[in-house]
Amino acid sequence: DVVLEPRRLVRGRLADPLGFPIADAELRPAGIPWSAPPELGLAGILLEQLASDGFEPSLGIVARWGSRLQELRVPPWLRTLLQRLCAPPVRTDARGGYELWTTRRELALRVVAPGFERQKVVLVLPAEQRDAYDAGTAQIARVGRFRGVVFDSAGEPVRDAEVMLARYDQSSRGMPARSRRRPTIGASSSCRGPMRTARW
Image 1 (tube, rainbow, N blue to C red):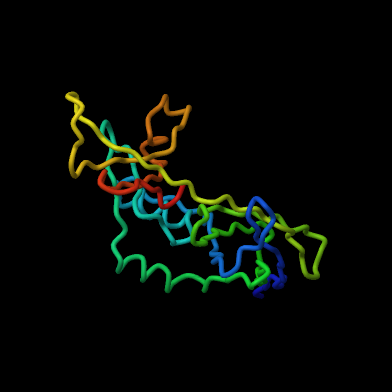
Image 2: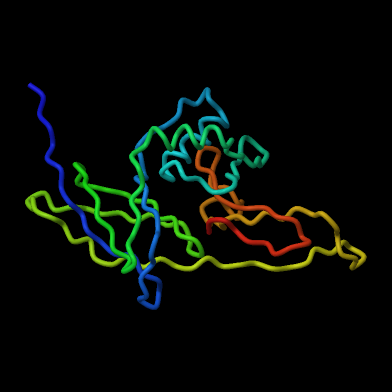
């Protein structure tokens, strides 16, 4: 016999740090427990990050492979293919509210909204509750913007320099990438314009 888990309705709301609703935000399933075979190398790191991000990655992934850092880019065709294989995203209404159905007790949602950081919202549904579950309000921080100028040792501005911004992780002794198999997200841009992270 095949036993099917009953679906449950989940309701929630997204707001900024001041409590104002975030309308038209996109919520995608994230945190898929999957580990790539080691022989896939950098391709495996990229696929693991895609699964963790709900197949909506940022512009680049900074990974430490051996003794060197490497930035990985997601090909547009691969992004389109993976998004088609996943459940369609849910969007918030004008009041920041959303509704979705799930059969899982633990649910991770990747939130994507213009002007806000990409954040993962984790929900744990009570096992004894079978009716609609109220997830409450999740606050999403706004994206920060970094501006600066690159100079050489003589104090002259450097044209067309590339600047990489990455998370600082104490466990990696200051290295921008956590480990060989756990990449760190960052973004790069020309020094002629503002430096802004796509996800921070």
